[in-house]
Length: 230
Image (spheres, rainbow, N blue to C red):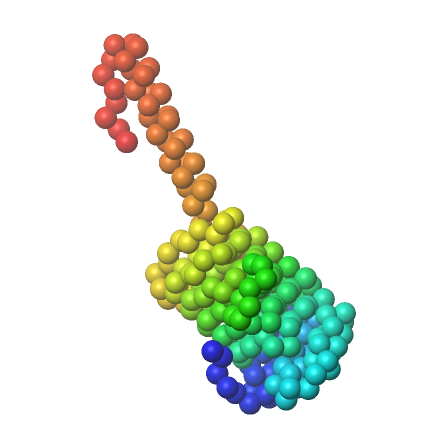
């Protein structure tokens, strides 16, 4: 569960996360630019207010405000979603965060990300993201699953099962590639170009084996002993 912090402390953490994670947010006027022009920051700020109203058990109003928030920012967050401090939504458009989603501290998600359910389940039916999770553009994390600390979900991945701490997930369905268990520098967290590709590595290994077998067949046909290399 995200830490119970005062409202303004979480907002300050959100602002700091935007300054840290967005390379475009530079210079003495960067905080003002974020406050005035960043839809992702506006979306989480509005959600924090809406969530407080939701917790007062006021009917209808939180849903109406969440709908207005979506119209203004392109980000759909259910009023009940529980989100920790230091949350950064880069660009934001198309992000969907479901009712029972739980997001820890210092998480970053990109546009077109969905934290959704898998059907008509009741109870806890959306993902839990622990701390320092980065979710790349277009990724889908579905169901009541837990994404561990320091996890990186590659762009357009579809994650349907729990992910342990310190892993990278890529592909459809998501495949886990173990990391060394230590959190990378925030700038490295935003690098979605150099993520591991287990399918590519497997195909490359298969190609190497096929090439080796072809060489052995040629050697047998020519009467020469096969090469011992490889």
